[in-house]
Amino acid sequence: MPQPYAAPPPPPTAGGHRPGSPEYRRISWALFLAGLATFAMIYTTQPLLPELSRAFALTPAQSALSVSTTTFALGLALLVVGPSSEVLGRTRVMHVSLFASSVVTILTALSPSWTVLLVLRTLLGLAVAGLPAVAVAYLREEVHPSATARATGLYIGGTALGGMLGRLLTGGVADLLGWHWSIGSIGGLGLLCAVAVRAVLPGSRRFAPARLSLRELVAMNRRMLTDPALLALYGIAFCAMGAFVSVFNAMGFRLAAAPYHLSLAVAGLVFVVYALGSVSSERAGRLADRHGVRAVVPVALAIVLLGLLVTLGGSLWAVVGGLAVLTAGFFAAHGVASGWVAARATYVGRGTAQATSLYMFAYYLGSSVCGTVVGTAWSRGGWPLVVGFTGALLLLALVLSLWLRHVPSLAEPPVEDQGVRAA
Image 1 (cartoon, rainbow, N blue to C red):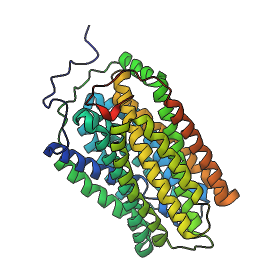
Image 2 (cartoon, rainbow, N blue to C red):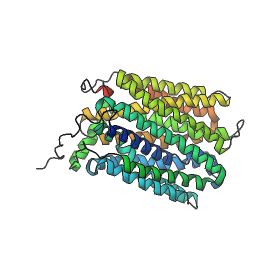
Image 3 (spheres, helix red, strand yellow):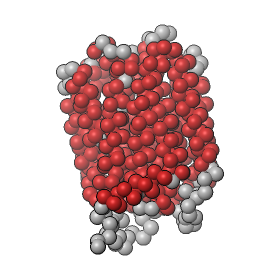
């Protein structure tokens, strides 16, 4: 009877690529660009919510569907794409995803109606799933263990800059040429990044293709859904991402209303704070290498909560400052937690891509559900109710991260594998 998996070949690069090597630099730059393009496309419509509300006569909750339908479809697709990459390979899935999502984004710019726009945004969620489903698993396989957290932080930093650049470009172009051209510009950016990634990203050298049977797939899912630490990490992803997206969904309406009355382009400037996420995720990865993931995640989540409370201030400086602190903390927490999932899954049993997919499913489910609910919170209670709703989510995430400190590790990794210590 054939084994579910082919025997892995000896790794050609013992221990994976180390920082300073040409391959490590190529991986870092390629995944940085891939993350930038992917998350710019996913959140293209977020700064346009007030404009879409006016253009299609929608409520805030209805306009938020342009983000939520994408993230919900993305979450569902991750459950299929993750296991598929165990057979098809990591790099092939990433390349197809980047090119397909760029084309769909360009088509979205041509939408003649709200219904067509939502259908295309849903298709985008399906197309874009390839990168978040396998990027961390690819890094786990190809990069030396001592640099995994750092490389993951750099990738997450690319997603942060993608979120910033996408929102800045979208808001500025929308003020000048309208929302159709603003979405099209992001599709063009995605296509350029897809070409660059295709040229730069090294092929998988340590990946062993799987002969995945249905029985093994069920067993893999069972392992990834019964480990208490992984379940807690999925919960953190749902709550933290739900709160983060909710804050920025509602922020567009807050800045467009009294007393600020900001235009789309000016309001979009608040997304410059995403640059802090690029820095904080990489820095948090280094701290996790040194002190362990269990120490870093709770501190990062506490910083997110602090930033949220600062936004209760009435001045624009308080709002921007609070968003800056919140963003830095969020990307630090997400960068370390996503790497933690891959590390923990390694000790639970083969299925790193599946565990990462489940984490990202919870991540985008939180974005979809909470990002829509917050529209109702804004309509009924304004910013104080938004803060109350998102603050409760963050408190739950913080409690889960503190509980994780008491969950026993499955194995003690080698000395050089400091980035996943106490997985």
